[in-house]
Amino acid sequence: MTIDTTPSEPAPETAWRQLDPESVKVGRLGGFIAAAIVGSVSLLGCAIMWLTEPASAWLALSLAGGAVVFTCFVAWLAWVMPERRFRYTRYRLDHLGLLVHRGRLFHSELGMLRSRIQYSDVTQGPVQRAFGLATLSIHTAGAQHGEISLSGIRIDEARRLRTELTGWQSDDVV
Image 1 (cartoon, helix red, strand yellow):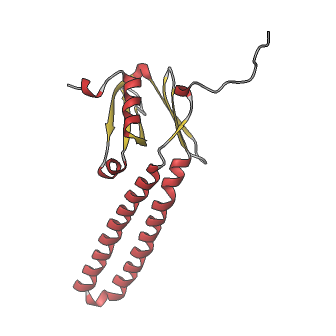
Image 2 (cartoon, one colour):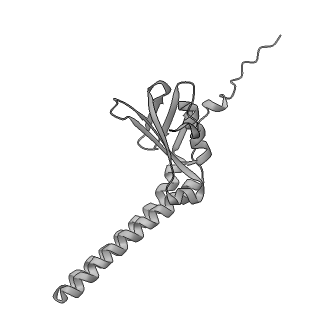
Image 3 (cartoon, helix red, strand yellow):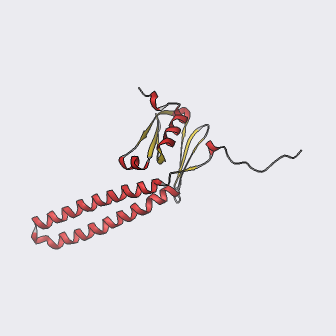
């Protein structure tokens, strides 16, 4: 009789899972929308300054140049950060609860015990809805960090996690 001593794979419910790859597109699109809004408002303010104070045209042009540089920086961040967030965020559901690991340089591990959960939310913004993604928020009472939010997961996965953690079905809400 031979005993197999090779380590086995963890059970599927305890394996680390990655965010959905579509979350990169959602993050970039949201970031570009924010960059466009910031840039437009900044340039509009510079144009108003130039039209109302013709003597300070050089100042308005300088501020407009700064606004363009800042908008380009925000757009660059909108391109880079969602990919990094996708690459360095993992979550795991086990018999105790949900564990979320984030970060590469500065690591954070947030855990939420099933027994401490007060309520949970599954939300979708318009951009998330277009890509079939959602944000799962889980709340506890009486804790300093009483909420874990996990965005960038499929809507069906968010509902499954909520059901597994709380035992509540979508149609159980009053």
